[in-house]
Length: 440
Figure 1 (cartoon, rainbow, N blue to C red):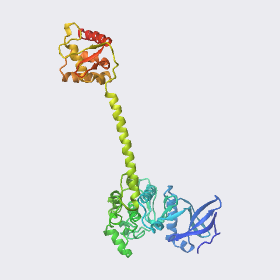
Figure 2: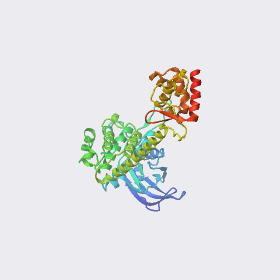
Figure 3: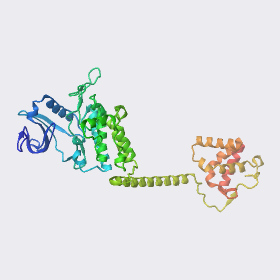
Figure 4: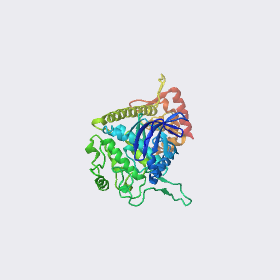
């Protein structure tokens, strides 16, 4: 018999009914001790005598209470009052995914957002060793602020803590060989066959839900349950692109992988599935028409912004590179001395001991842009000069002189005819240095 408003269950006062299902009736209630609104699922007294129903009810409470995740319904308490078993959970404001789908397919961007949330919730449950086994739109709730909550762990399989040998035992109520557990249309092939279901069965059910969110059509719906189960075992659903032409290929691949008949070929974890879906949101997929077009526009604007930022970085890097490699500015001087001439035997000084040596050294220095070499550490500078020296068959004395000229390169200028010159003061310093180097 349904509870009437004002009924007291422990510290909770029933306010109004919210709905009913195979596992009980749900009411809005007030927690008189903590002064908050809650939801209470009550297992009717007529069903309390059914050991299997009571066991599943308790199992749901234990499974949900073991989880603490924003995408899973929070369970506060389970108790019995005057023979009535009930479970207390957070009160949600919104609608089930089934109620939302009655209005048609969900826009692509929002469908992916919902799918990512569901995947994260499943990953949290699987990490705790809990397999839902009855995932369907009726067990998914969308709040008014867009958060998706996974409900109803009544068929969940719970993993017990590992024993001393490291083996993991499970509580497998109602999973005897040949027993079918789940809801027709959302069961995996292994569930249809009555085989053991693991976390990959939830991934298959997730694929059917994502397909339905995008297309507005149930994945394997047939006139009868038997035909639906046969389709799950033997048929592939129509391609999403045949139903919704604007669906990006990446999303189709995610759905098809979830719906593989062989569990080994599906995503092997809900975390991987969530990652794949999040990657779709970050790529430039651009649906061409329909209710999904706004996602393509957003992606296009994002792509333009990224391209602009990359161009700005490249321009900045180019400007920085140019400022590094260009010759140092040379101040204008009135007293100018020409260092090299068209004749290769021209000397820097009047001492014939090093005739033509300074001319080649100065030309060699500028031909190989020593204004850059002088910025290198001493070790790197020597290596660079030695390589150049070997290539140009420069003598060891000329190599020493060219190395010595490196610090003065910023003060030497070259003209279009290939000659070089500098100020009288710098000329005197180079002359003294060249004499010392050659004499040594």
